[in-house]
Length: 352
Ligand code: NAD
Ligand code: DAU
Image 1 (cartoon, rainbow, N blue to C red):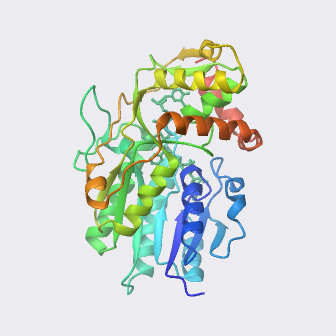
Image 2: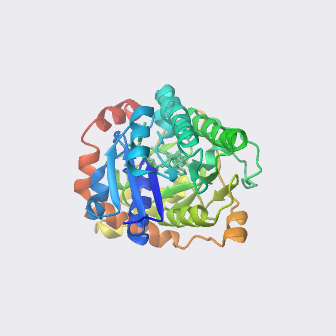
Image 3: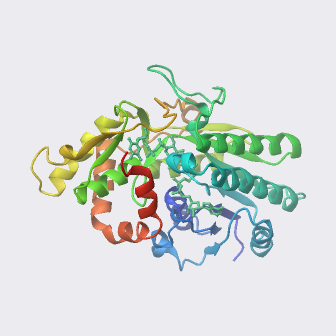
């Protein structure tokens, strides 16, 4: 079959990547989708079981830092577009082991950019789409929103590594005329998220009647977006975005952590037929995250006005859908936490 685009998606076995891969494989049968993923603790092919035999889909276990293997993939599949999702993504882990974040998020991104530059030298139609985060902009006080023009001010090893990779993407656009686009998105939630992140961690702990660890006073604020809304924004930007540009993606949906966890407790009490207020008793305030960013808030007017995107999901509905998915997929959860996660959990939370 003559495919219209031959797209490499990196990190497609992770949370956002797996939803993106599924959406593109199903929606665009005339695109070839090649998913490469190192399958770290955060990558899980069980998330893609339903599409693994689709004719326009291929998976290869590859580390993006391995330039030889990535080049072989470019040769084999004649890749002409990249959507780069692979990353070490968890802020708390970046505080424990910053170098791992530099390796994958910075070095890995530059390895990919170099291969694209060399491979696409003569090619007119190509794109390197870099998936990034709102955390590159730093931390907000009570007011204000991040714009695409907000100066970078990353404060954690994770956000510093993502900021660095964003700069390299822009540098390859300016210096080598590579067609690139970047999007910076707020906090995602939904099915298949690794249970180290706030929402699935609390869902799992409520099921197990374990403490719900809230960092500091629980007054930090995040802007939450349903993962399929992020995927639809990526789709808009991939097809309609302007080369060299950056687009913010957000949910217009700010919550204090403590209020969000209380809302989750109410849904879980109902779903598990527990007494009203039972799950809230599990809330435990613990030592704050080092350098904990106070508030994120995204202004996505540019994406809305220029490309016509807006989020669809209603938050309460999205949360309920997420809770139901975790309740119905406890094997998925137990499988992903059966490896090194127990060790991480102990280092992160024991005696905190
Ligand atoms: P995730 O941790 O769930 O998945 C990351 C995936 O990358 C995993 O499948 C992992 O195996 C793979 N990976 C890690 N190192 C690799 C390497 N060296 N080579 C190949 N594959 C490797 O992450 P996520 O939450 O899905 O985030 C995906 C992207 O979106 C990241 O770039 C992240 O910075 C960005 N982002 C995430 C959020 C969020 O709320 N989760 C918000 C904005 C932006
Ligand atoms: O803003 C986008 C970013 O959102 C992404 O770039 C990151 O990849 C993603 O991990 C996420 O980062 P956060 O640090 O905001 O997400 P996390 O789920 O780890 O934490 C959300 C908030 O909840 C944050 O204020 C810290 C707090 N928290 C988190 C955990 C894991 C707790 O209070 N207790 C916890 O146990």
